Amino acid sequence: MRLVPPARWVRVTLAALVLGVALLAAEIAASGRTRRPAELRASALVGYEKASRSPGSAWAADELRVASDALRAALLDCSRQDNRLFVLRDFRPVTEALVRAEALAVQAEHFGDERREEALTDAEAAVREARAIEAHAIALVTVTTLPRAQRAHLLRARLLLREAEALVRQGDALAARERALRSEAELRSAVGPALAAAERFRSQGQIATWRRWIEDTRRHSRATGEPAILVFKEKNLLILLSRGIPVRRYGAEVGANALGVKARQGDRATPEGRYRIVKKKDRGQSIYHRALLLDYPNAADRARFAAAQRRGEIPRGAGIGGLIEIHGDGGRGQNWTDGCVALVNADMDELFARVGIGTRVTIVGGDGSDGAFSSLLARVAEEGS
Amino acid sequence: MPVLLGLALLSVACAKEPTDALNAAKAALEAAKTAGASDYAPAALAAADTAAAALDAELKAQTEKFSLTRSYTKAAELAAAAKTAADEASAAAVTGKEQMKAEATTLIAGVRGGVDAAKQALAKAPKGKGSAADLEAMNADVTGVETALGEMDSAMAAGNFKDAKVKAEAAKATLDKIVADVQAAIDAKKGAR
Image (cartoon, rainbow over all chains, first blue to last red; front, side):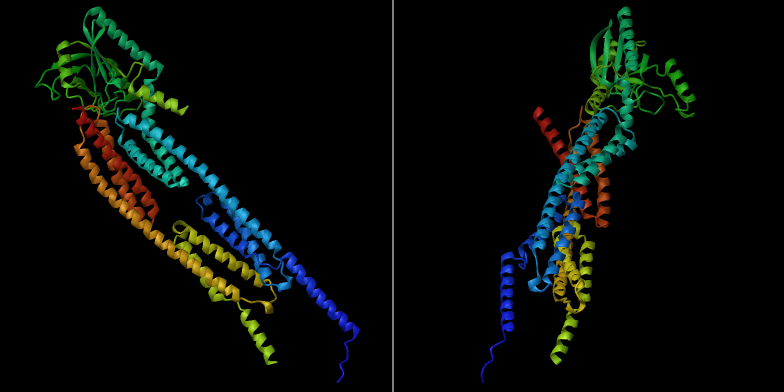
């Protein structure tokens, strides 16, 4: 049978088809548009995972959200292209989207790390601040006794501060800062009232009063030749004057409520004022080795007590107190008495021998120079400025 | 004709969403989050999240296609992979939590022993001028730690092992310092003689 050659139009059509396919193949090969960016896709996924689990991720929530949205959009585009006919696929926009998504994840990780570092710096600063207040609190409790409620605040504060330090070491900045701030709040509750009470040791008016009493006592001792005693509460110091000149200095422990001014019986504060010795109790007559009984309360004390009662600061049934002495059995290393002034027995023996009934005893908080409370307050003020 | 019918049936079969597999993957991811994977297995959870993202993308791409051309074969594979990743995150979270619990338990036991050691040390601490206030502060610290033990027990009971561990570490640091300070005071007194 003789083959009939195809009509011309069929030949042209076939040639055009072949040319078209060849051109398409060339275009696909040259552009690479059908090449699935598998490595880029994997890299974008890994990049996002790394950013979302990094320690700084908590500080870059918004940036991570943007990165997540970009990644999801890129994955969707990739899936769409996967599902098209091979020759119609174009992964080039997908490539750009994946590159962008990975860059956003890297950026989120970077921002998160930076902000976490800042947060850790803030947390460390909060811990330092709390430590400074803790140091003041410790200095305070070495010289005075805090009331029970404030002691409880101090205990909680110190444990919270140790927790904050542990959290800083672990790099948990948010929790560390939270603990440090709570510790600081507890510390302020613990020592705030005490520091406020201690302000009178820096008060110019109060210091002037104390200095006047001290000078009056020196002048009287100089003029009469009689011995006199000066007690400085915040310095834990008792000075024996002879003819107005200090001749002996003894360490003295005062009432546990060292900051306070004696207001009533049981407040454990040593009174401040100008007194005299009214009785000498030798060995066997005092439970504290030897004792010198003072004339507290004097007229000024009674007037102050009555005024405080009228103002409602002291309950009706409360007593003014008494039996304030200078006695032995001191040397415990802290202020512990119920209001008396305690010396070690050897010092008490010496003092007992050199004073008599009627000897003036002037008790002041301080004299405006270095003392436990005025120094502490100066440090607090300096560190706070 | 039979061939055409077979092709039509096959395309319908592949066009069905693998609902069971999708639900299983979703439930597994929720379970991982509930198990605390974000705290105890963040890396595994991140991998599970990205597997879920890939699954979501594939599902959406199929939804956009003409129904007769849809195929959920790949979606089924991705759902299985997402479920596996979520299950791994759950397991890692459970392991991480158990490890944290064990560490906290050990530390708290150490704190209880440390309280006894600190009390014994304080009983032997040198007394005298200048030391009474320090001793009182250290005794107060031991009392504070004993109170904190109650807080640690409460945190453990509530499953808050990370918090219990932090409290225990803080308490241990306090007790160790007390013992060290007392020993230093004893050594100083021996050296002064």
